[in-house]
View 1 (cartoon, one colour):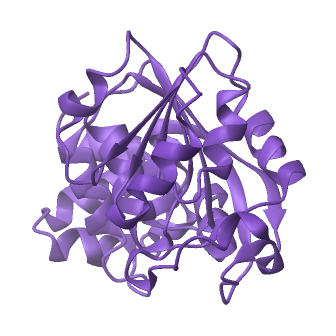
View 2 (cartoon, rainbow, N blue to C red):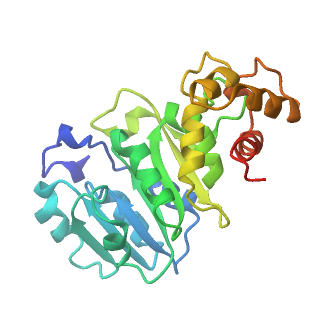
Length: 267
């Protein structure tokens, strides 16, 4: 992998790079972007995915935290007018600071360090509605949690909240052998397409966290422990044709929303 010989990997930043051009092009294809699209990339790394995106998009703004890559990336993209590499931590920047680089709506494509996957996804779902899609490489296990349905083993807070914001789809599984350095687990490419009619609802987000607080406990126990009136909870369960011993992991997003509205007197 000749592209990686000019610099050392930084384990502190969770760097795992891809050089296979077929895979890189496939990730870009999975995102569904067009030549009119503006794209935000998080984690430029060696610039291999950045380069693939730049060939299919109008504009690429890519953020990289590792300052040791500054010279390498400047040289790599000096003749790429539609690529803007910014040496900064996108997770710590205000959304307004990031979005000033875009004319309007944009798409996110990223091979993220695994440890920042969840906070970064929610940063762009909760703080803006301009990110129309997020196509990312994540641990296979995380991807399975994202797309899990009610009653399945991996179903939980992440499944519910991302179903609330997005339509999610695993587009491909990527074996660990495709990365340098090689991670311990396989990965997956997942595309999250933002629902246009959904806004951040802190109260609902907190509610979901409460009902999944103790997974082995019933919905009734989690709700009453969170402070909801016992009689009201029982009445709400009955009105929604649910047993008293039902657990949150058995409920669809629609059912959870209905219970939330009922208990908070929003209907």
